[in-house]
Image (cartoon, rainbow, N blue to C red; front, side, top):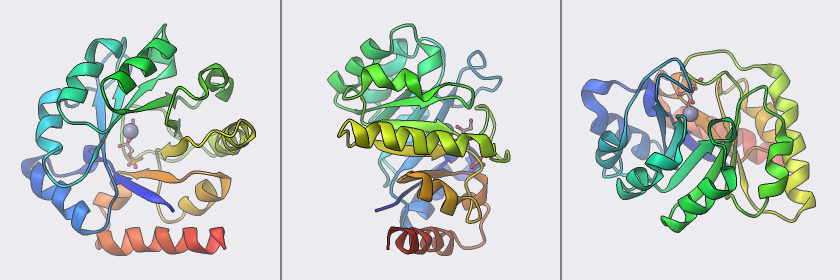
Length: 220
Ligand code: DX5
Ligand code: ZN
């Protein structure tokens, strides 16, 4: 089963609630919620306050923390009602501890990897995370083109997870659209984030249905 997470980053902020409900009505599975601190990435977005509102709008919130020392804010995002909390392996000195903290707060725990980060950093926390988020653009902005070299990393992580009997999900984020989705799903992704392509699509349901049909073809 392929899951789709629209990124709120690309929504119309004048109508955040309506923009989330529009995606829920179109058949999305999660709301991807990009948190940026102007330090780990060169952009600033929303914090736990807006997450609390987002969590009431009909989709489980998948919080992607692009912030340094994410441990400081994990509990705040959990209390805001987020379902998944993902931290960057590059943003904490204590990845294992951060993942334990996320699970202790009652959320699913994710590890995100920048394009230049080796998948090896997952090896010694296998079993401690529920989701590996592979960045296929440099984090910080929506609307960028997918970096093709990152696709191979998805397949490497797939092999690592399968080899260890680990059922963690592989999420892919950055430059996802109906042209790039097939190769990402073929490589082993089962959760796709789509920002500009999905919020900008003339028909969000048709976009999501297209990706589900592509997945069904690949899985066959
Ligand atoms: C980028 C964010 C992404 C972004 C994706 O740093 O993590 O979630 O919203 O946007 P698109 O789908 O437009 O590449
Ligand atoms: Zn993201």
